[in-house]
Each structure stands twice: as structure tokens, then as C-alpha cells.
Amino acid sequence: MNRFPFRSPLAIALAVSVLGGVGCQQNARVVTDDRDKIVSIDQIDVQDWSNAADQVLQQLFASGALDTAPVRPARVEVTRVVNDTTQRIDTDLLTQKIKIALQQSGKVAFASSDARANEVADYQEFKAGDDAPRLPYFVINGKILEIRSSAGSTRQSSFVFQLNLVNTVQSLDAWSGEAEVTKQGTRNAKNSRG
Image (cartoon, rainbow, N blue to C red; front, side, top):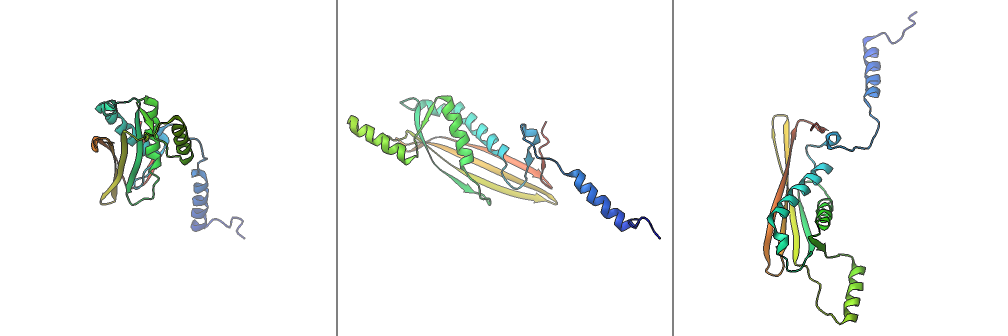
């Protein structure tokens, strides 16, 4: 009688694959470095938002457009960032990163979109006898585009982040900039940037 019922090649291969699958699992951990983040070929990852925001902000600060406002910090409102990709994405991830950096620069004060805050401000101005509307000097709008291509098994996705700073007094684009994130490969992977 066979004391080792798992001697057949099929049973051995099955046991090895099960044990191998268990050995390859990785415990969850907090990722603190871009080198360890997952890179998805066909979608926008968190590091893509950060990279795009950094690129467009460097362009905006270098342009000096914010310094043309007659009152500092310049009053700004974010109107709309259009998602022209195949993904459902929250464009607030990009605009919030940009808003935080602009506010920290001291060059910009953002018009609030909070209804209650606006009611209180309206009341305070009414009591003070100031009936001039609080209008933004600049408006920020933008678009996110996606371009895909492939060659054999290699896929490439490019995401273009476009932003415009509009002077509301003259209704002219005071500045336009864009950032591009391109990813290429045959499958999703851990980021290997060193």
C-alpha cells in the first residue's frame, strides 16, 4: 500500500503551486517612497497627480502671471477641470494639490465655494455698507486628456493635464500650461524608479 498518496506528478505540481502562491503574498504596508508605488499602465496613479501638479505649478510660477494682479494675494476661483479620458476620475485630486501649493506660496487667495461662508461674508459686507461684489481676478480651468497606443504586447498610455489661468477683467488667458505623464509596458508593476 502506498503510504505517500501525493506522489503523482499532478499532485506534486498542485501542491507546489499552492505553496508557491502562499509564499508570494505580501503583507500590506504604508508606502512612503515613489519608488515603491504601483504603476498602472492604463490609469492615473496617485504619483501621476503629484507629478502633473508639480510640473504645471513650476510653469505657472516661472511665468510671473500671478504677479500681474493689482491686489495681492490674487483672488482666484477654480471653475472646471474636464475629464476627457475613458476613466471615472475625481479631478479634485489635481485641483486640490494645485490649490494647496498656490495658497502656500502666498500669491493666491481662493474664492470659497462654501455656501454658508459666502452668506456670512455677504451679510458682513451688507452691514458695513460695502455692496461691491467679491469677484475673482483669475479663474483656473483645465482638461485631462488620454492618448493610448500599442505595438505588439507593449501598451502605452499618455495623460495630458492642461490648465489655464484666465484674467476675468480682460477675459484673456493670462497663462496656459500642460504636463504629460506617459507610461509604457506589457503589464502593471511596482515603480522601479531609483
